[in-house]
Structures are given as structure tokens and as C-alpha cells.
Image (cartoon, rainbow, N blue to C red; front, side):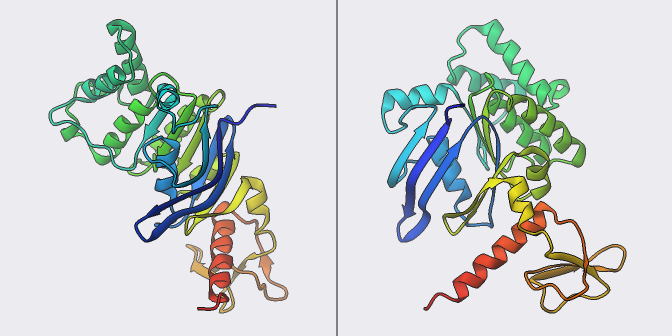
Length: 291
């Protein structure tokens, strides 16, 4: 059995009077885990704890067999960690190559030739090899995202934490990124926060749904999709009892809900359908809680 790379037990985090995370248990092994949830769910807070940027207020955190609260062990974790935050600041005037090379120096790549070879490798992996000397200030938003990803890939880290890595990428770039991440995941543990359910469906073995700081699902993508079986159907009109409905290009409506009309034309559910059902169930549970 492969030992867990990440183990969180009862983790909590609060910012002043706001609970960002509450009693989070999570175990991750090599492979790719997708993190889904609405804005404000606590996803970025969770990723920052995994990246050793934040300390948990409660519970225990173990990363790569180390305790991030111990300074020496935290340093060891960071040597084996790659992190792409949601927002990454770039020094004025730097090219992609200069910035990633600078990050490699911070990660203790002291020998020039191996370091620069690694910088060229990761820039090529994210499709920026041909414009490595172009100033970051002249790059598009999607290209800047890929510079941030390149620095996270330095050294093929054992733990890779990515916050919205596909934001700003076109479909071709997203497919290329999936290929890069799938190859890394053969030997590393990746956790990816995203709003793109199709990326999770295409890449991930495990999916975690976080809402209001709590884990509401933790399991395989297939198991989450299976929850929506028999609850997605097509109709000529939007179904009033459906949790959500939308008009397709064909003019028909795709309906998702727990109460399916008799004789409905059922269709295969997607991960997005299952996620919407889970979110709706949580909202209904909240409505039943006394004020």
C-alpha cells in the first residue's frame, strides 16, 4: 500500500469571526485530486495550508511524512513542494526565463547549468519555450498563468498544489496542461482547485467537494457521478420541480433534480450534474436548520 502524502485530521482555520475551515479530514496519495466548491468555500485556505503558507488553528497536518509546524521539517517539505497560488506577483521587468530561474535559485538550485536546463524544461512543458525571453508584462493573462505553473513544476515535486491552474487558458492549452499533469501524477501527489468540472472529470481519480469550510464529499469521480444516475433528464420544457434546468442548443432542456417525472427521458449524468445535485442537497439541508 502506498503511504499517504497528505493527512489532515480535524483541521480548522478561522479569520477573525469567520470560519474558513472546520473539522476537515483529508488523506491524499499519489495521483490527482480535484477540489471543487463555490466561491468562499475555503478552497484557497485549504491549499495555502497544504502549501505551508498558512498554519491551521486546530487539528493536525502531516505532509510528506513531516510536520509543517516544525521549522526544519517545514523546510524539508518546501524542498519537495510545488505551489501555484491563485494570484502570483511578478518582479517588474522580468522575463519568463528570469523569473523561473529566480524561483529555482530560491529552491536551492545552486549550480547554474543544471538550474538553467531545468528552467528551460519546465517552460517548454507549459508551452512557453519559444517566448522565454519575452517580458512577463507583455504576456497575456493565460501566458502569465503558465509562467506561474512553470515555477511550480521545478524539480518535479512530490507534492504539487495548484489553485485554478486552467484559468485563462484556451481549450488547446488546457488539453496540453492535462497531459503534463497526468505524466507528473504517475509519481507525485497533485491537488487541483478548479471551477472546471470537465478538467476534474478528465484528470482526477479523487474529488473533494468543499462548501462552507467543510468536506461534503471525498471519493472517486465515478462514485460522485453515480449519485446522479436516474436524476438527469431531457424535456421539451424546463421542469418546475427540477433543481436546475437549462436550454440546450437543440432547443430542449436538460433538467437535474431529485424528483424525476414519471416517464422522463433519462440521460447519462456528468460530473457537473452530480456536483449541482450535491450543492442543492446541501442548500436544502441548510434551509431545514432552525435559525
